[in-house]
Image 1 (cartoon, rainbow, N blue to C red):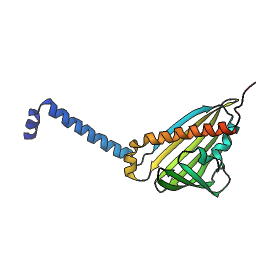
Image 2: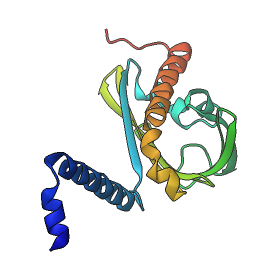
Image 3: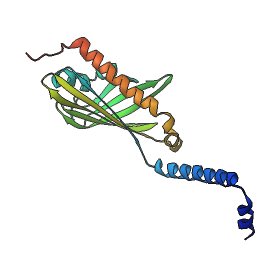
Image 4: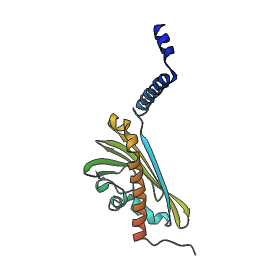
Length: 191
């Protein structure tokens, strides 16, 4: 009763401050539960003036992928041929001065249409896919999807601060892929 009477004596300003603090605390609790086992998904798509057969070697090639994939500096072959399902690779990444390695497994591969990778490292798990959708005889829509799951809970909790960097990485990868394909392939034309 005494607490109620004291709270009733507060003016509207104090009540709104308490309500705002309670809302912030509730948001933090909800966010903490959501990121407990949640991952973060990013998608980027762009249409290129090339056929799927011109783009496909750049997507799957062990020598060509580090040229267009942002932050990927080298690929080591472990098992299987490039672009086949269930093959594995050792990936070497670099972001600024930070370096790490990941083991990659091709989970799905459809010739000149789709390739999906599952990557595991000491800092995160990633699921990355590239889908080539023919728009016309000489146009292909390239859809890149990446799902990131940082292994440390603190990294997941504060990941919203790094979403811009993850989106920028996909945009840079698209830009570099378009540039490399343009440098090595002739844009096809329909007569």
